[in-house]
Amino acid sequence: MEKERITTTMTKRALAASLKKLMNQKALDKISIREIVEDCGVNRKTFYYHFTNIYDLLNWMFEDEAIEPVRKYDYLTEYDEVVRFAINYVEENEHVVSSAINALGRDELKKFFYNNFIENMRKIVDDISKEMVIPEDYKDFLIDFYTDSFASLLTNWTHNKDKNDKEKYIEYISITLFEGIRPDLERTHEHFANK
Image (cartoon, rainbow, N blue to C red; front, side, top):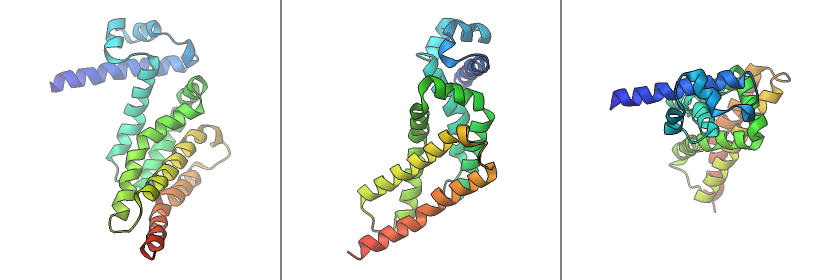
């Protein structure tokens, strides 16, 4: 079973590498499954065994390369490393990310980041606020607010990187978003505990 899982992951990564290679040569919407499988050296059945279409492969590639690695971090204490990894990934894969934005639109890429970071943000808020009096709907509001902000900042990095110093950008995201959560929750606790 483990060998099969490893083989599956290797096949998916090979397909993703071919997609990335092709995305560096042409627009995403101009790439065909035939081109991917020929470059990868597999047949179409292999592609469709793992993915429903090119966008499914693209989504898996981003999850495998950009989301899975940050799951190993403790978001409460290593948030700056999470931000650094995410910004570095976007920067190192600028052409691929830009191609995805051009094909899918900025909103779709932002939605991808949002959907993949919301549970981590929920864990941060829940961990910090477990001894606090905070209404669940306000927690949901904060989780949405911080996740949406982080997803927007990651998506915008491709267009803003020339205007911003990367280290400052990482620092500003870290102190504004992640270091801001605890004080926001403490103020909210005081507000609702005194009602």
